[in-house]
Image 1 (spheres, rainbow, N blue to C red):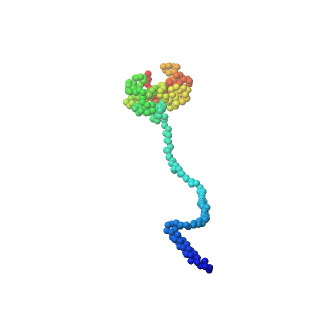
Image 2: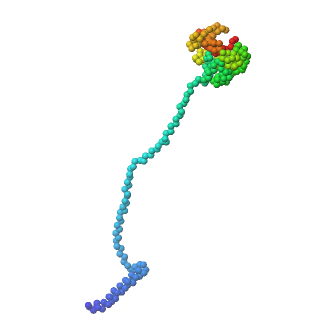
Image 3: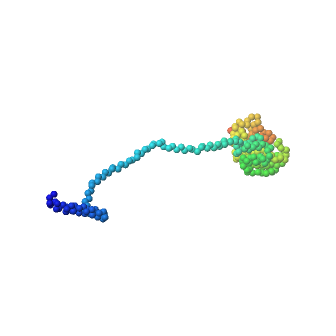
Amino acid sequence: MNEALKRWLPWILAGILAVILLGVVIVNLGDDDGEALGTTTTVVGTTSTSAEPTTTVAESTTTSQPPETTTTESPAETTTTVPAETTTTAADPGTVELSDEGVQAGDEWVHFGYDDEDAIDAVTAVLGAPDTDSGWIDSFSVYGTCPGPDVRGVHWGELVMLFTHADTDFWSGGVPHFFAYYYTALPPDLLTTEGVGIGSSVEMLEAVYGGPLYTMDEAFFDPSLGFWTYDQQRWTGLWGYATGQTPAHVVTSINGGQGCGE
C-alpha cells in the first residue's frame, strides 16, 4: 500500500461510516414522519391480467307438457216428469141438444118429467142465467092453453122450457115438472141430437127422421107452410114448422113434448 492510500484510508472509512449512519438516520426519519426523504421510488411495471368475465348462462330447459285439460262436468240432467194431460171427452158444455124425450144440457140429461128447479139449473149451467122466468101463472096464458092448473115458462133467448103441476104421464098432479119446450129462432144456436137446426132443409129433416115415425103436412093456419112431426106421442115427440113441404124448404121451429093448444 502506498503512502497516499494509507494517509487517506482512515478518512475514506470514516466517510463510508458516516454515509451508513446518515442512511440509518434518514430511514428512521422516514418511518417517524411517514415519508422517505430523498428516496427514489422504483415503480415496477405491474402487469394486470384482466380475466375476461365469463357469463355462464344456465341452459334453459323447457319441458313441453300437454296443456292441462279442464273437464267441466255439466250438472246432472234433471228430468221432470209431467203427468200426462188427461182429456175428458164430455158433451160440449156450451151445447143444449133437443130431442123427442127432452134436452141434453151439457153432460146432464133433462128428460120430460124432470124436476123444474133441477131442469132450470142444468140448462143455466150451459146457457147462463135465463132471460125471463114467468113464475107460476094461469095455464091459459101467453103460451096457449096448457095443462092446468098453472104453467111456468123460462126463457133463454128463443128457447122456452115449460113446467106444470098438471097430472101427466110423468107425475100425478101437484108435482112441478118439465113437460115441453119451444125453440122458434136464434139465439141460442141449438141443434137436435141428429144435427137439425133452425134453417136446416126439409131434405135433411127427412133424411135423419124419415120413416114411419116422420110426417110432413100442411100447417093448419097456412096451407103453404109445412107442419112436421117425429115420433109424436101424447106427452113426447118432436114437432115444428117449415117454410114449405118440399125438400128445398127449411125448418123454422123445433118443439118437444105435448105443448099447449090454442
